[in-house]
Image 1: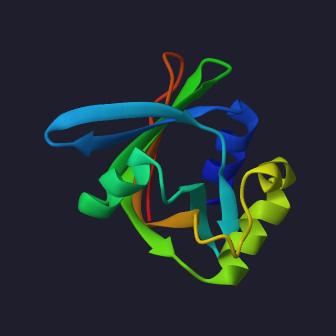
Image 2 (image 1 turned 120 degrees about the vertical axis):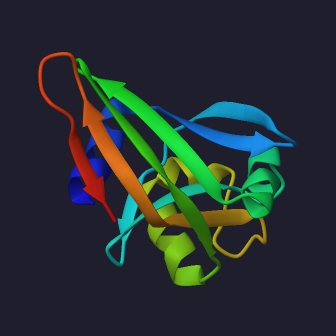
Length: 130
């Protein structure tokens, strides 16, 4: 999981895909954080992406860096604990201008299960199931 999280952080931006009424929705994200051995992302509960994940927690993310791309397909679960939110916001202090662990809007989600695939044109795929 550390390798996956580090790649996402180094890429800076990854794209998260959800589904809304059968229509794929993709948007850029920038948070990737390890907490208690799990890969976490962050959003706001008022956003459409939060509602889409609540309806269908199966998502996919994709990032690209230095000729390698990473796809992570899996199922997200919300962690509503203050400790999880605080850990994320401490790691991404720039988010504190918009979010607080006690604001009722901050949402952190972790990959409950999934498959991560590192790919490139120069090497065989590396696949990790978690």
